[in-house]
Amino acid sequence: MYGKRKHKTQVLSVIISLFVLGSCQETTDQHTFHEIHGETQGTTYSIIIVEDKVTLTKDSIDSLFSAFDASLSTYIPTSVISQLNNSKNHLTINDETGFFKKCYTLSEDVYAKTNGAFDPSVFPLVKGWGFMSNMETPLSQTEVDSILTFISFQTEKLHSIRFDGSSIELTKKHPSFQLDFNAIAQGLSVDVVDDFLKAKGYKNYYIEIGGELIVRGHNREGENWKIGVDTPKENLTERELNAVLSVSDKAIATSGNYRKFYEVDGVKYAHTLDPTTGFPVQHSLLSVTVIANDAARADAYATAFMVIGADKTLAFVKSHPKEQLEVYLLYANDQGEILSRMSDGFLTFLEE
Image (cartoon, rainbow, N blue to C red; front, side):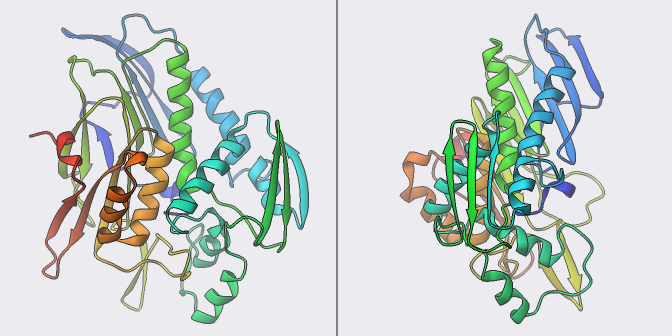
């Protein structure tokens, strides 16, 4: 789901009222909880901490996001990734946060496991297809083929990279080679906040950034967190839930095409790009919800699974048990009905 972050549609949320901006603390007849809300990465974030004593401030969270963006935001010209993208052939740069290295190495692993279905080098394709700006005409096969000549995350093919402490040394073999971690970075930012809260000793909380989320412990009722999955329909005036999940100590991410596309001459172009063909994917899969141990992997795999489709996704989950993934797939049949498929272990998370 490359290029998604500017207009990310939230398809997951905790089943609880979240209307207060800024931060607040409230005591109910159950458990005390503290809420912090704000904006980051072109979207919104929400944090709920179910603890009696909370000293966390909104400023401390916003400072984390500022440091994260300074490393990985393609919308900030001075960020680490922007400087690397704008370099012509060789650049050495420092990243004291280590966020770029973490994102790169995680991406490298998912890229290899999915045989390139997840590929952060698609940034030129994202721009070419106009998902970062308005676009009136789709790309031709010739134009796509031209861009594909500098699309590949395979090490040594179009780039080489070396990490030495906080130092990053990137060498390009084509000046147009550029990286876009938007399909994993938002999930990683959830993990960064998760690590921050764990380090402060909190055990019961919910973190959501633009629809990617992680939950720990229990909610204010002392139960697993209840997470809603949207029904993948266009132009709904009110939110409609397809399923409710009961989850603790897991990360969840959803990718979907049903609300993000543009249409030219009656043809819909989805915003999920297939890195191997260079074209938007076209299949009946409407959304993929992934449950994983960390939000970065949930985010990345949700993107890859939207590329490869339902059958290959279920086969992948079964053949990669060490990844500890569970998936919930929503698709449309020939009659336009929305149906679901899921991995074997996903049923344990469905609320009856």
